Amino acid sequence: MCLTKPSLILRTTIGLLTLLIWLVASFSRPPVACAQAPVTFGPTRLVNQYPDAVTFEVTVTTSQNPITSARLTYQLRNERFFTTLELPVEPGDVIELQHTWDIAGLDIPPFAPIEFTWQVTDAAGNLYRSNGEVVLPDPHYSWQALHTPAFYLWWHDQPEGFGGELQAAVQASIQRNQELFGVELDHPVQVVVYNGQAEFTAWQRAIQPNLIGRAYTRLGVTIQFLHEGMARREWLADVIPHEITHLYIEQTAYNPLIDLPIWLTEGIAQYQEEDNPAEVAQAARNLARQGQLVPLSELDHHIRQADSTAVNQAYLQANSITLYLVDRYGPSCLTALLQANREGRSNEEAFQLVFGRSTTEIEQDWLAWLDVSPGLLITPGVNDYITPLPPHRPPPKGELGIENTYAILIALATLSAPGCGVMMLGAIGITLWFILRNRRKQPFP
Image 1 (cartoon, rainbow, N blue to C red):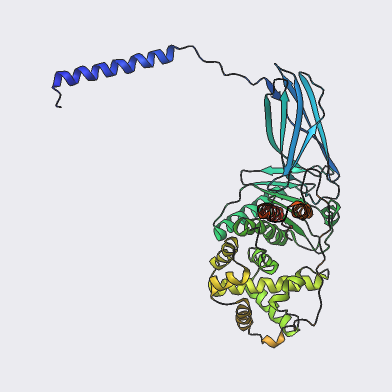
Image 2: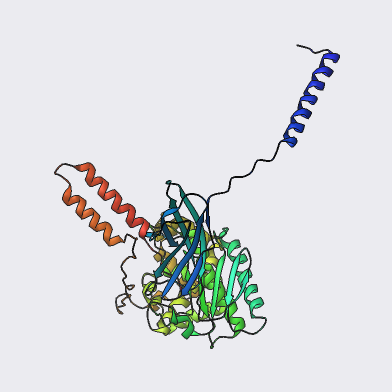
């Protein structure tokens, strides 16, 4: 239908008047008061006795029904285990909640991020929650801090200017890793610096004397100490980027079903340091002439040895192999390898996918790149190496360990009546689900 000009003007005028009336009515309405929750949680307080214990405290008040029950849930960030427990409560309008977490013997690094949830229920059955996250500093030192959206830095008793040097090294490492891997970390990096090995080992459950730093990749925390045998500039150029790179490797490659070769992760972490490639290659040639190069298949065992000389040689070899891969295939090959692992491919399958060659063939190519005869490799089996098992600890209260999942399977299988296949399949499924969820990542050196 075609409107005449007067009709169009009339309708437009009516529409504008209607809009004006609606706007006037909207602005003239009295404001609606926002309902305030009857329950208020005060700030969570920590009584820090690290590395032995930490106590959570909070004050909760209510303006209506008295609070009758309370619960606390907590876990380390990104951990698959969490603890939930009921807290004792004297019903009332103001209650004090408290719980002490015994962490003695647990491998929890300083400044580890802890996620928690307080939950209370009032007499009418209403449920209220308050979530938060805290970090657990080492209370034995007066820490200095520098925070940005990308990282948190912690150090103590260093001369003025150290924080700026540390910040520059961390920023350069983050930028370099983002360029290599094309990813950003889910959380800000936490970089903690101790002043010597004694401070570094004081909080550790299992001391590894050859380590100068550790990366807790699931937590996003790196811990390192200033080594008296290293110049400050060398330490900033090597140790800081090495540990931060492990966080990016985890972000790029993590798959609970795949274990990356240690030599590959350590090789990539060293590649992100500021070493001279020519010097690394020459040092690897010298090892070959001394008969100290080991086959790729045994390199992981050497990296985990207690002998510092063997460890340093294994790290050098891993660095040299990584430099060869970059020289021959470009830096993007490292990211492609990690992404293939993330997709569920084994290390051998990842090498075939990215390079079209097996790890054995890559090893031969690397030796040719070094101009070294394969006969100079240590013969496999001549030396026996034992990798120590990590110390066992039972799961804390509220956690379900892998051993318990096997018990669940056995119990359900025993209780299942003959021919009850559905229950058996369910038991197996539950067990496998817990095993996959409970796979823990050890911190990287």
